[in-house]
Image 1 (cartoon, rainbow, N blue to C red):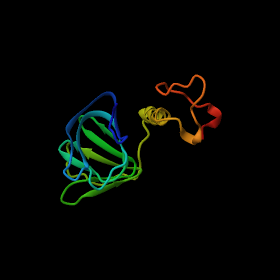
Image 2 (cartoon, one colour):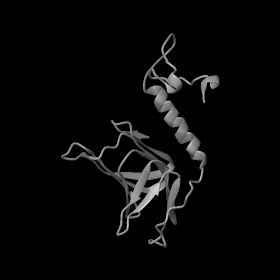
Image 3 (cartoon, rainbow, N blue to C red):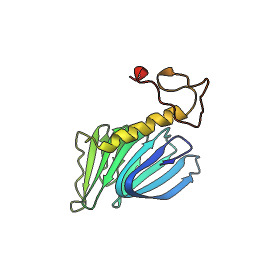
Image 4 (cartoon, rainbow, N blue to C red):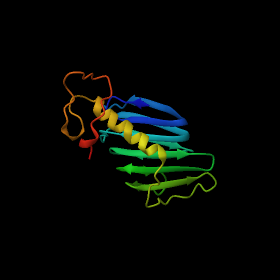
Length: 171
């Protein structure tokens, strides 16, 4: 897992392979992030994205742009790449850009580079639960105010340790 200073994160499952092609600041002060996804399942949680930020994903030479906060799951193998937007939206660059909205999946086929229509669903994967658990842990580690307004202070509280909330207060 890689976490950026604005709270965004990239999580790789098992044998996933990515490359950070560019991480820098633009002259405007915005963040420039270019990430290439080569193989496997990768969760990308982009938070606090501003209009000055330039965030791109490259998958098989195709460019996916993130213009505002979004959560994506990219799943690639030798034949297909599936870009699922779990929250927010993303854009496939090209002569006719394609918008991938929340709960849509764009399937890029290695043998059909012109396939550009998103499916109106996102398939659930076993690793989605793991990603959600990591998100909950991140909230708990962020400080004393946890989800549901529960304060994590008192005897035995260590801010560097995961403190699960009692089951009775989870939604």
